[in-house]
Image (cartoon, rainbow, N blue to C red; front, side, top):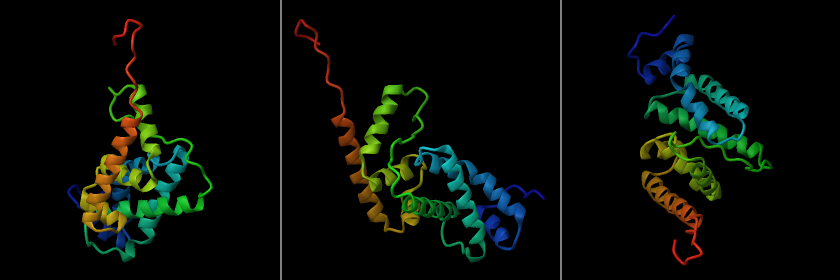
Length: 186
C-alpha cells in the first residue's frame, strides 16, 4: 500500500509506531540518500557507510514505539545516525582515518582544490570537522545541530565559529607560494 502524498514525517512516524510497514518504507525512501551521504562523507568505505545507514534505519524502526514528536523529525533521525556513527567509532577506535572521502563541492571545483580541502578538513580535530560537516554538507540548521549533538544552541554557534576559523587557518597554511621568475618578477 502506498502512502498518500502530503503526509508529514511525523505522520509517517506515527503510522510506523502503529506498525505500518508502508509508512516506514516511505520514510526510508525519503531519507535513504541523505543518511547514506551522512555516513559516506565520514567513512572511507562505501560498504561501511551502507551498513551504518542500515543500522540507523533499524534503530529507527526498533525505537518507533517510543517516538514522540518533540521537534523536527529530521533532527531525530540525524541524532540516531550520529549516535550510530559514534558507536561505530568507539568499536573501531584502532582504525586510522587514512582517507577522508569528501565529494567535490561543485563540478567546477578543480581536483587540486578538492584535495586541498580534504587535507584541510582532515587536519581539523574530530569535533570541529563533524560540526562543519553537519552544517555545510548535511545542511542542518543550527537548531537541528543542537538537537543532534544534544548541546545548547549558543554552543553550536560558538563551536561553528571556532571550527570555521580552524578550517580557515588550515587552508591559509596550505596556500601555495607564488612562483617567482628568474627575472625577479612573478
